[in-house]
Length: 108
Image (tube, rainbow, N blue to C red):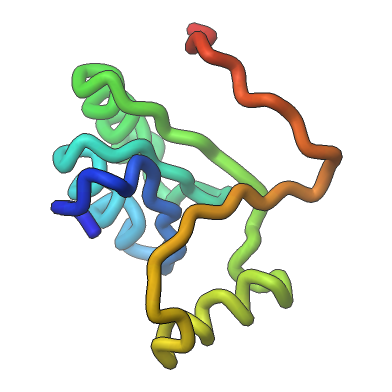
């Protein structure tokens, strides 16, 4: 995944305790990927600041979102990935609200 140029964003779904998710997110940032983290993003403010600084230096975005890991649709997607149900990779945009157009510029 980290070496695949067709993948622009990686959603990190990991254990918050011990900041495992920050390690995975740092690897994604280092590979030039944008990162989505569920809230809470971790249990260390300094680690979060370090992640955000790394992302800013690389020109990457770290998005913080709702805890989807327990949502039934996410559980089904995780199950499908683990069981290899999909023979091809695809990109999806999931939202709980009406679909919107993503802005073409970054807001600081």
